[in-house]
Amino acid sequence: MLTREHRCGRSEEQEPEPGLSPKKAGIGRWLRNGCKWKMEEPEEPADGGQSLPPVYIYSPEYVSMCDSLAKVPKRASMVHSLIEAYALHKQMRIVKPKVASMEEMATFHTDAYLQHLQKVSQEGDDDHPDSIEYGLGYDCPATEGIFDYAAAVGGATITAAQCLIDGMCKIAINWSGGWHHAKKDEASGFCYLNDAVLGILRLRRKFDRILYVDLDLHHGDGVEDAFSFTSKVMTVSLHKFSPGFFPGTGDVSDVGLGKGRYYSVNVPIQDGIQDEKYYHICERGHGFEPWSGRFHMPRSY
Image (tube, rainbow, N blue to C red):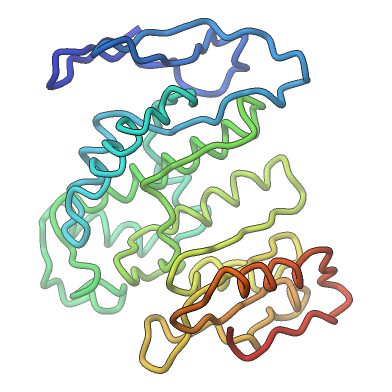
């Protein structure tokens, strides 16, 4: 068991790597005792796992790595501070993330893109002539260490997916993930690696069909593009949609292609939407059968 000192003097006992069942791995529930973290052995749930606490993918090193992203500096540590301030960590099981391997990242991204990202990351070369081809530039600068950051985020979401596969929990959270704009061979919208796609692909090892729901302000274009031709993954995106607003995609008429037709659902939303309209959206979507092709949204809400 590893121990790490924090700024306030408390120590953190890190959990074993995920993969074994909670009982076999001896994974306990994390509690806060003053400034001291400690482990408590979990009780066997009496309801077949329904009472298992959510898993929170976290380590100090991971938060520090995520804080290094120039476009959103210190956001990860701010989120974690809020989690601690509201004592949410007391209701969750903390699991240390793994770093994604090149092979894991290549389940979606092309070798050429990953190799270029690794090269410019090592050199800190933001002016490489080939970078524009891979979407690296103003929105996604090729700063030193950016490949390590991408691998950390991708690995954290893969770790969360693996926790679900292993039956460790019913809910797994990577609060520093969700970089949904990255394409197969291109960075986009501050996103260098599409960890959401990597997580879905990992879940597909066990689960035949996946529902992906995206509530970000921007359209989840990278995830939709990745699965637009399949009926195995249904993508639902609620997002702002207006002229000139990034990424400019996600019209209600975009419903998927080929076997994936009607497995992409886009709900364009205008500024100032109220709770009643959100409720109406959910009510219309309840019981939707994509193969029927009978789901029609207004042009925007």
